[in-house]
Length: 187
Image (cartoon, rainbow, N blue to C red):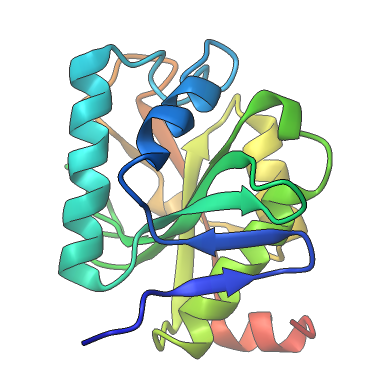
């Protein structure tokens, strides 16, 4: 029997999903502003497909995007975590990919960085990653801004078109950080 993974930071818990988390997660994150750079608001079928993808990813890899919960009050803030890159046409298929999505009223408080730092630490320390990648689109400056603050470097040679989407969501830009750079950052 494996023990469920739980990562803790001073203010957050990143944990595995429970059945009743999903409705609250979608209620607070499936909004026009949050989903602006993520393909748009999901209908019920889209929500079911996303849940299925996260659960299948976790079963396959022992990790995926974890629920982010604020420890102070138990509020669901969104998700953050790791997966194996698997987008059709991706230039980084099979590599460790970090991602996050937080509710709008959690923006600007440092929660995304705090959660992402915990996920990167887990990638290198628990899962043996040599390198971790992050994906976004050019216009999503808050996302790539966080990637830069995490010490990630732009990898233009790995950019690709995700044909599942139309512009502005199609043209994927890639950032990465390797284990040595992460360790040198003092994290």
